[in-house]
Amino acid sequence: MNASGHVTSTSTPAIPNGSGAAAVLSAGIGAFVLAVLAIAGDKSAFMKRNLNFYMPTGPLSGVTTVAILVWIFAWVMLEWRWRTKTVPIKQINLAALTLLGLSLLMTFPPVVDLF
Image (cartoon, rainbow, N blue to C red; front, side, top):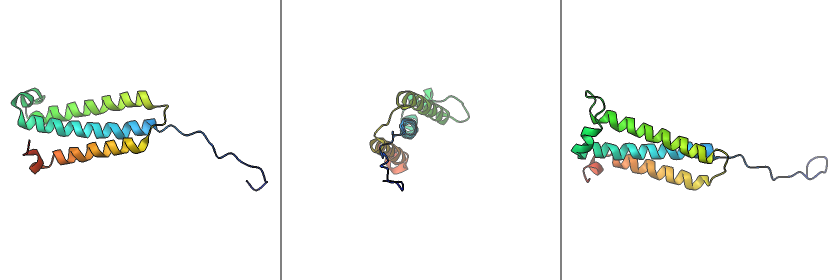
């Protein structure tokens, strides 16, 4: 009840969280792709040759370029699908944090040497 004695409704429509969730999950996807490509560029001669977009930089130029393109593509696709929806943000945050954690782990030199 409010001050005038009238009952007010507490059920307001939820604000869609899809755009924010798309940004968070796409960041996790982009970071994971960066880590996978960094390992592939170091361990595979084929990948090293194909990721060499700019000779002075070596395969790092292709690793970062492809990872950025995947990140942008994932963001655009998820935004397109989720922009008007309310999605389970806890699961999406967990997935994004898992991908970020794995990407950090996969770029740690002792772990990379295991591959």
